[in-house]
Amino acid sequence: MKFLRLSPLLTVPVVAVVAALTLRPQPAHTAAPPQPLPVGASATGVSRPAQPAAPGPAAIAPVVPAPVAAAVAGTPSVSSWSGKVDLAPLAGRHIGLQIGHMQTDQLPDELADLRDAWGGAEGTWRELDVNYAVTERAADLLRGAGARVDVLPATVPAGYKADAFIAIHSDQDQRLHTARGYKVSGSDFAGPDQATGDQLADAIAKGYAPVTGLPEDTRPDAISDDMRYYYAFNFHYYRHAIAPNTPGAIVEMGFVTDPADRLLLFGQPDRAAAGLAAGIDSFLTNR
Image (cartoon, rainbow, N blue to C red; front, side, top):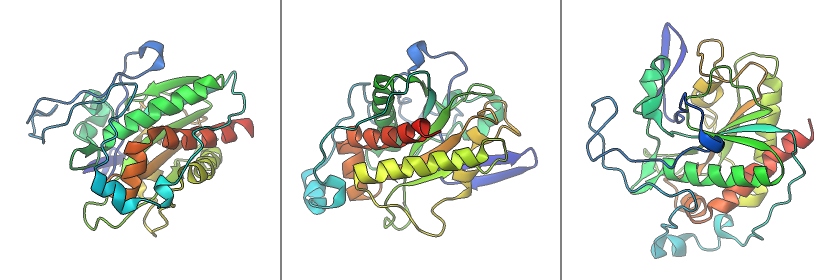
């Protein structure tokens, strides 16, 4: 459970929260790999489950048991892919990619309610791990196209400015285990680039879907308040949020609780990263 605070007087519970960006500048604009707390430890003293080993920056372990692979073989999620994505040049562009649920224990006091928002999980499959793996790969692709990319844990620098800011997450459905697919939302906080944030979200969806083959999550409540009113968008109340003129979007790449989504996210993080990079590239080259 996470909490989305819309004003000093209102606290709204939400189901998926982002990770945190440290206040210190990150060397080479790259976040360190996620590090688990000791068994039973918590940044706030509340006991929490043991965490599996953190991935390194180069790869996420392709933890895809054979029965799972066999069960979803032939689905769009695991269909063949060329392994390549063509990006237009992005020289001079500045992009912020936030790793969902990264270093939440380092969130500032104004976001203390989110310090135990560790993200979703299904067994040993952690949302944080795949968020990290995909974000780092997407950053490499966009840098290869000439962009300057900041890879951010979740404490967004105060008034963060960029040509695009994207919070990268994965979802879970622990109640029914029936939901699957991706979804993307722009910010609902009014600002000069609110409409541009919606355009960014639309471009990401159009780039991500054909590369990954994942379906869109079109349930009536799929785009929820925790996406539209994501804390990193809330420049009206939080210092550590994007600037009003920074287009922002949040993407839920798929469900860690769905075998087919999970097979792609954990087994082919390069593919998910390519889809995100294609959408971001399209948005920036058409502005």
